[in-house]
Length: 338
Image 1: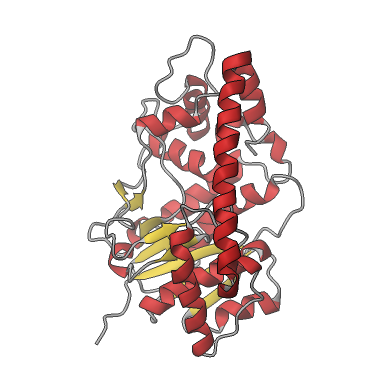
Image 2: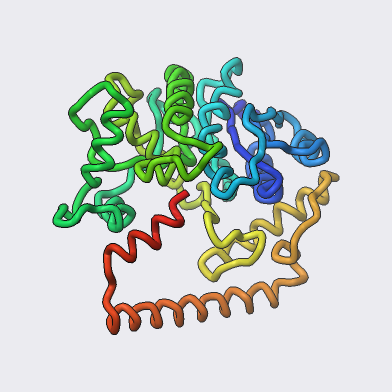
């Protein structure tokens, strides 16, 4: 007899992500039918909710913030709601709560990695090299090219308002994280903090220090709070036979596949075929998720690979010819940050 799962999976979605979240649910249920899953829906219709609730032990909750059409607002809203999503499991019995990104699939039974042995917050920490890359356009003239820029650290230190000494050297990702119930109060804290520093009603008013909204809010708290939860490295990719495959963020695999992600096409189709044989209702699928289109899908993947290769070469040549002004790069990158 299979042991009951010790975790609740929580996922945030709006109407734009119904299909990938549906596929994520299929992949979890295929390997672990008893898995409890909570969907925090942002302005979902009843029909969209029904695609999820038809599965046993899957529940939909309405988010406290509705959908917004303001440019950049949905990214911030989805991030602010991460704490709220974790709190949907507040009254459940399972000791572990896993917040998963909607553009992932499970390649096997990942339940053992959703319920680690030591109570803590499990998340992926960036390496120093990764942080150096993401902050490269935000450094002041003459500032070291290593580490988090001082203006970010100063803003985070002031906003948290607790410790002055930095407790961590690198940032922490805010997706695909696992929290033990012992530290569930942190979900309240994280949500309140994001509500303080992120402005979803006027996205342009959110400071550049939070251009990765939930992630930098989480990192700030873990760096400068007096009593944050202990952080451990997430285990969701520790087993090559059963892991959580992140197929995002872009391009969206349900629109077209890249060569790098094409290896997951057959497993996704297998999940959809399984859903059909089990009698589950399936959303209307785009062309990229129909197996009869596989030849065209592969052709598009190769064409995209060629296009990106040519674009990289042209961009590199352009930089060699006209130079690469840090100020111009920062301005161009800054327009995309929210």
